[in-house]
Image (cartoon, rainbow over all chains, first blue to last red; front, side, top):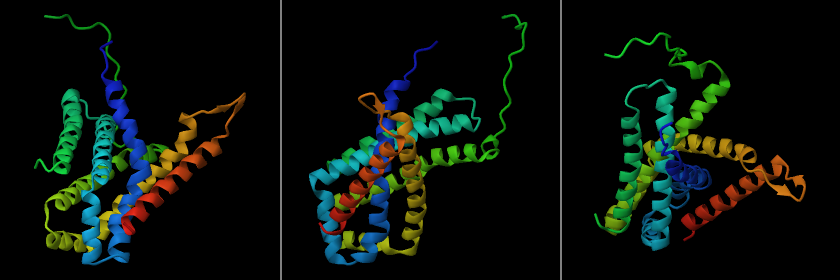
Length: 115
Length: 134
């Protein structure tokens, strides 16, 4: 049997599953409904901007983005497989995990103001 | 040239719509697809992060105001439904994955699931309180 690189991807996948389950619904509720409905206006906008600029929030947001993308990558790879996509297995894996790696690098670069 | 194999390889036929045949299969597929919506929300988070890091106050205020639009709320609602589905099905599953023994006794499944729901509630509350009353 060929050696599998499965365990490597399973760590971020399961971490993303946990972080997504715990944090993402509250974040969506916050940015989609609670903030615009309860706290509209320039004052709160300034506070939210300052909050996001603080290092801890940046680390948190980058972690949520990165782990969720790895979770997505691993899931979507198998969704395609389950839906009967037969050819190009390594291409699918490359594109899925590649997008998660690029997304992670991009969000780190944004958070560090490199770009 | 390689000789033709004597036996035929058997490949079980799989219809592209197999996951519509049983509700359990469909739920499985919906659960897998929740990750797409969560990833889409993460793209939005990246935009939020980018604007917060680069915009001046006035343009961030305009961006912040756009979260209240019907368009934004519709997309958020769709993402919220799928994200909540992911959380609920995940927490319901945790007792099957995490088996805890207290001495000789197995901790009941409901306790483990409830502990995760409790954790979910606490984490959500912390995120919302920080976001609203920072």
